[in-house]
Image 1 (cartoon, rainbow, N blue to C red):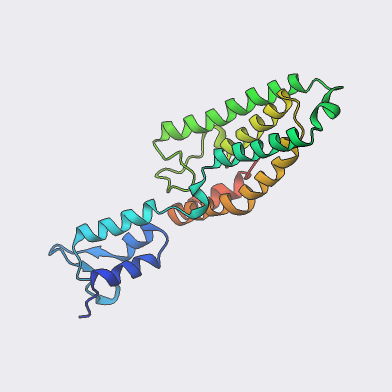
Image 2 (tube, rainbow, N blue to C red):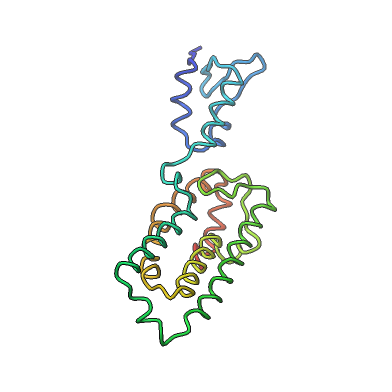
Length: 211
């Protein structure tokens, strides 16, 4: 029977992005040695296997080192800087009560984002983007959008721009949304698909990504 050393099992684990797939593939026998597929003895202690799968669960993609809320904040600060250098907000927004519209959007955004966050909290799953969820949440605001917290942050962002009569931040918001649409959300949904399989595919087919 073939034996794989602990360093080699690290490589093996690295081939499988979903901890659930690894736990399905590998079994730990009663004697303390791992036993893999096709009768391959892994020659590792259960504690080592647990440590490796734990590392896979907590591994963070480099894009998630900047939390999503900070992406909105940094985008807005860049817009505010441009507004200071080349102001265009006051000229274009003076005829319109953007402060009233902005207040409504800001409050709506806070409510929607807070509702999404509190729903995750009640479900006992992570609220940190990029982390593996322990529960697939499909109730509350997640009945209407797969990303209600991002929708809420977008509304609050636009509301802030309206309150401050700043046009540059609003013009830069599509860049932030494109970053989420093309990079962050696909990574998050890939983790959800690996973790929950057909259940997530069914949810994804019935609920829109945004609104």
